Amino acid sequence: MARNVCKILGVVLALAGICGFLKSDLAGMHLTPLHNVVHLVTAAIALYVGFRGSDSHVRTFNQVFGVIYLLLGILGFAAPNVVASIIQAHSADGMAADSVIHLLVGIVVSLRRMCMISGPNYASPQK
Image 1 (cartoon, one colour):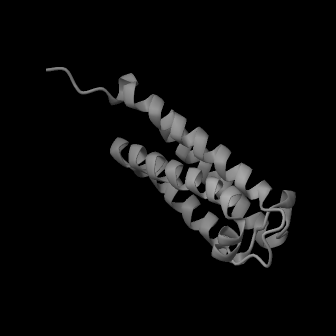
Image 2 (cartoon, rainbow, N blue to C red):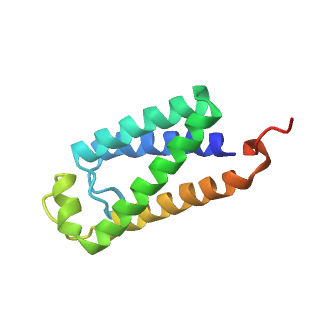
């Protein structure tokens, strides 16, 4: 399941990156060129890990990606000007859409990561 999360996330991020270049205010988000490149790079990593990575790579990617997106979502609400400057947006107005999406993605990936820890596929092998 975690591997599928990487694959789905990779496709969604690739679409977000491509669509962001075509329409920079898609769904009220701030899709700047830098933001789109980050989506495309993250998509490439997620797809690689999802299709070719080891189980360890999948776990690590989900953990790191989940935490980064959770923190980014929280920062977007706590200090929208900081996030706007990071993604090179002209203004922090309307950053809520970006922050909500980052939080939701971070929660989904992080929860999946937490569920994986006790899942049968990741238990220590019995000798």
